[in-house]
Image 1 (cartoon, rainbow over the protein chains, first blue to last red):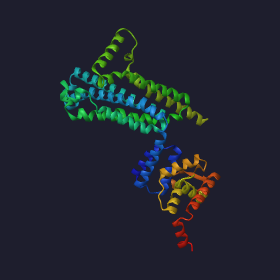
Image 2 (cartoon, each protein chain N blue to C red; image 1 turned 90 degrees about the horizontal axis):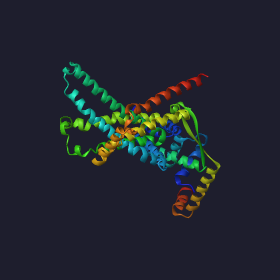
Image 3 (cartoon, rainbow over the protein chains, first blue to last red; image 1 turned 90 degrees about the vertical axis):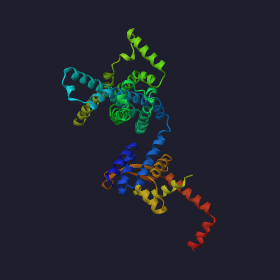
Image 4 (cartoon, rainbow over the protein chains, first blue to last red; image 1 turned 180 degrees about the horizontal axis):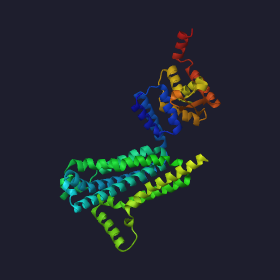
Length: 300
Length: 110
């Protein structure tokens, strides 16, 4: 049996309970012959187990309450990050000239663009990671399928462009968006790097949260949920402006703007980057505490 | 009343005795019936029979042959023996006087 076949068996069997995974993989190792038929058999078992889990109401609730809305929001956020960063990237990469680095003013402009783009990318990536962690912790055995569904929502929601784009109305930015790379490939690359990879990473860590003590696990989940909910609430305007009516988009913006002017607390006042970092930072701290505590217990 | 596949599985597990586990049951069923038993059908049926109290399973010891992985060992319970025996009796009773049963006994057993 090849390494590729074992890799496939290993990944497929992740959807099974640990004991069953061990027994099934052991049976396959003993037969010393992983044929395509055996792989289909294993897939059949995974499908049966997943189907049995989906007979419960909990996976459907998480699908409706988390996967679908957050998939749309993450898709819009990554789309916004792609369109927002495409112009400076086109300016500096497609039209690069060493003179950019000669004057202090242009160096400073380049730096401010780089910081702004990284800031935006970091927010989307941290948000996606927190979504993955919450999904992994709340759905555990159905998490892999939930993540596949989330990925589909992210990709397909991104394929529904706003009316301007559909009509090819790129306005003054036509030089950038008339290029297929910036219009099609670049948003897909960002979706993969800023959304799908962090979601999978977060999901794997979320599934391992069961190893943590209950208090640490609950605190971590609360932090990750706070990140997800606040960023989702902050991004609600994106949905209205991308898919809703222009009037609803304007009203939302005006209402939020007036609230800020009137000194009324509003979701817009919450700074995005620190909020996005709460989940990953809390996870890093919790992991550190847990490793240290476990190390002491083992020593004792 | 057991299903046909459940009966075949219980029979294989009873025949293998102490050595009954996933891969061995699959091989036994293939050897006796000539039909392949898929991993999905085997493990979901094991769960079903265990929940009915017709067999019990537990994780055995890891073996080097299996890459250090443990086996899911299987043992038929007293209820399982009763149900399998009752299924067998029903099949024998149902087959009496049927042409293929008569033909078999005349050609093969005389």
